Length: 280
Image (cartoon, rainbow, N blue to C red; front, side, top):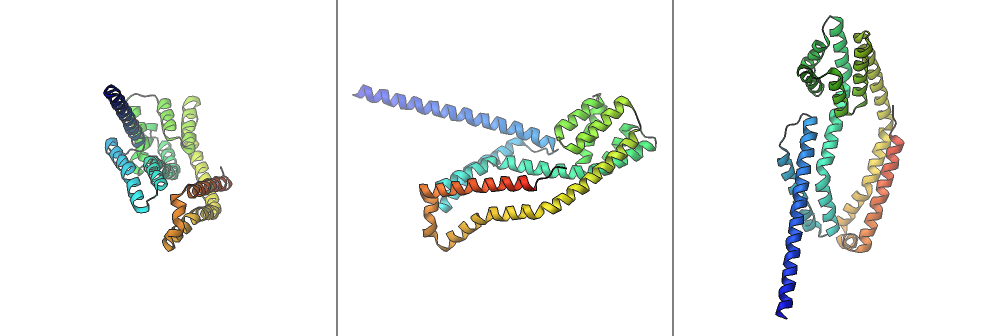
């Protein structure tokens, strides 16, 4: 009997050690992937922040946010959702920051191309024109062109630098600029005239996109209001009558109803996005 107990204890101890080892390996893998991806993503946006500090912040959100939600609501399903939110928050924040930076870069690019064209007509070299754009424009355009200039000074071919810029930014307007500069260098031609025409094209494209954005803003706002309305009503009803709303958060059928509502909201958001998204 004692031998059986000892064997069971050893098996349990081994299982605990194996579980602890797997948890440690998974944690270290998550940390390494997070810091590496954060380092690359932040450097692409010229943000030089210690990725290890960001990982510690993300880990604190992942651990503390569900505990706070569980203590406030007493609902495990909401705590799990809070943990998922804490885990994906850095990715969402990076996407938002990148999109804002890309939008600002697209707005600055036509003026930068006009400045380059004027500098080339005045007799400056391509590097001189790029240097003028770097000096006279704010970030992010000056940052990207400054990186392009530094790569040129280090001996990298212009085509390779341009391809690297296009791959790093993945913006349609930048791809047009890269294609125009690459073709002009390969086949020749009046580069200042090419840049002037490209600048005019990008301005017209920006005006059209602005009109489309204004025309579709009402549909986007309606979709946002309709999507947030069930959450707002659930919060109001919970404040008014917590006992009546408690089964929604503490029973299996309540969780099923919330899951169905979530799926329907996601489907509605998807269809509204397809309707109001118009490519130029």
